Image (cartoon, rainbow, N blue to C red; front, side, top):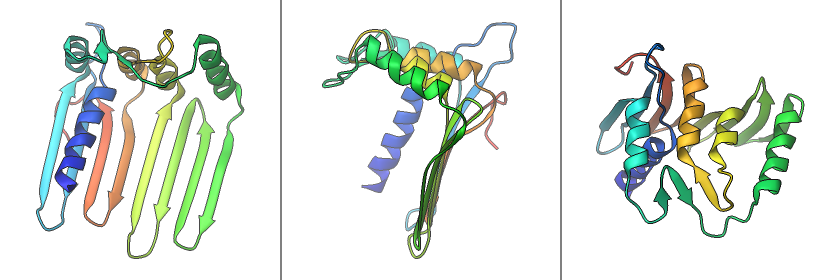
Length: 188
């Protein structure tokens, strides 16, 4: 079960996070590292140039994935609604939107400098940390103009403009997941 979840996370990261880079610029690399230290220790490292990921996504044959766009059943946002949501989030001043403090968990969601942050800290026996940073440019690119469609290629192009650093980190007692971008071809 854990291996299937881990493989799903790796495939999701690969599907959601690549880019093409102009020839003059240094190539950005997408890195995914999953370290399991439980009963069956295992480390998975994936290091791919974003231009390769973009090419792979564009070439994937799938019923719901065409030309880098995923068609999502039941997604009802039309172009006008999508634009209103994105404009609202973009124009909202920086600040903390959600704060939850409990004895065993804390959650924070905030916007700062064009980036949306989510931080979860679980304490006690099931100690876990989750840090997600989502540049709003990536969210903008994700929603394709066609209703019911998410544009993975536009998301990847947004990553091209994104600076280096962590995008997602998740840690618990037996797992350490990190997804990040930089200009090195190998992971740390």
